[in-house]
Amino acid sequence: MDIRLGNGFDVHRFTTGDSVVLCGVRVPHDSALEGHSDADVGMHAVTDAIYGALAEGDIGRHFPPSDPKWKGAASEVFLAHAARMATEHGFRIANVDCTLICERPKIGPHADAMRSELARILGIDAARVSVKATTSERLGFTGREEGIAALATAALVSA
Ligand code: MG
Image (tube, rainbow, N blue to C red; front, side, top):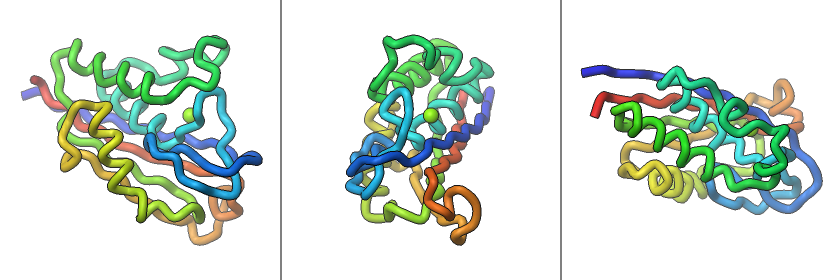
């Protein structure tokens, strides 16, 4: 059996707005996240983890921010592309684990909806998808609520 692991990391800064999209779920907040696409920092980290496991670069390579085509794009497009590439390379996604780093908004009440949404796009059972969160104890840019960071790991096994 061939096993591949990949990691992903992403950051988006806060801007004015009334909600953020995290792992495919719109969460009411007193700011929005700034980005070329929908700025879904969690989904971007998961997408990069899958590209990483495949040694296939990163989101920026497949969906260049310089291309106006991806302006305001739903990040589902990116994640679905990574999942399709995994299949094309002869792998299935064994599990993904995503950690969102922010003081606010509270992630816990939305975590299961986020798991379901990622699982739907990846075409795997939600039991194979983890979404969790931590604060940075008010330290650094996440602690000052300047933005949200996300880390992700993906494990792929030969199909
Ligand atoms: Mg991003």
